[in-house]
Image (cartoon, rainbow, N blue to C red; front, side):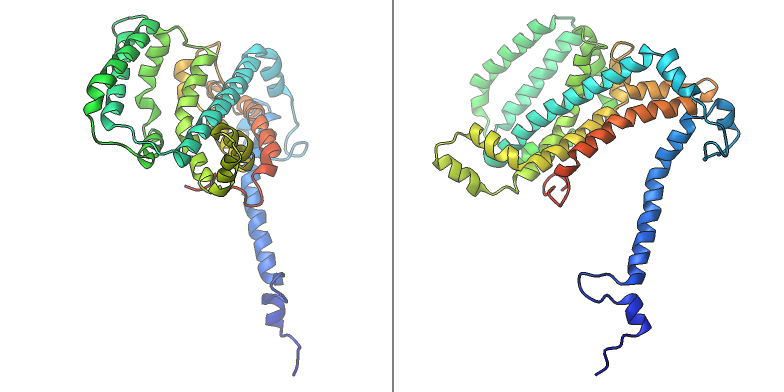
Length: 349
């Protein structure tokens, strides 16, 4: 029996299951190469544009420094020397606010997500509605009635406790874990522009407007539902046998969480932290309303490059480069945690 292969078999059929035929392999590399070019070209355009002067940008597309145009450090000098603190202050503000809010959101959200997968909750629907109503009254008393926020908070808490111990016992309908999880993720459906004005007035009344604290609190609250949803899905993939064995040895729930669950959840934690960090890093609307000069972030600085004469692409390119560099560096550092298919729960949904 002849074992000679035809031209078609040589070009289109692999010799073994671990191999790829020449034509499919070539097509695959062509597609991957094209997609790599599509992804990296905007970054190359930014780098090239940052070394142009205004007249070179307006003259049309020129992509090869030293051939199409003479490189200049004009934009870099303006951003780092002429602006000086006006560039460094938003840069450090972005780092402080984004990293702090991301860490807080991941810590709180991970604990909440774990609790929703391992503990059964049945809060009374009426008690939840009473809490929301009391919270609304507290905000109204601070924003519209001008009551001091510590007094309003203490009064609201006392009112809720009284109502919970008296009227709260009569409620029968209960919520469950899935209801709580759905309610939390549904908060992301609400457009931020619908609540940014009340948030602005609230921070203005309590004296936290244009501060790191205001941005960190708001960013954490906005991104917390995402962390809970992702980490909850990831924790569900961890076998219960590990926790039951540790519990039999006398380990408390907190010890199980910090010594067993979190080490096994490094891929999910890394991916979730990176996602939340990117959302905080690029947040524009909230920063626009809650900050002016002291707590201004880099997205506002990028938007400020759109002057009356049009977008100043040469300056904007420099700011965008220094804006995305830390995120790229953090992604490279965390890459070993989010490869090899370890993101079972963190990329679902």
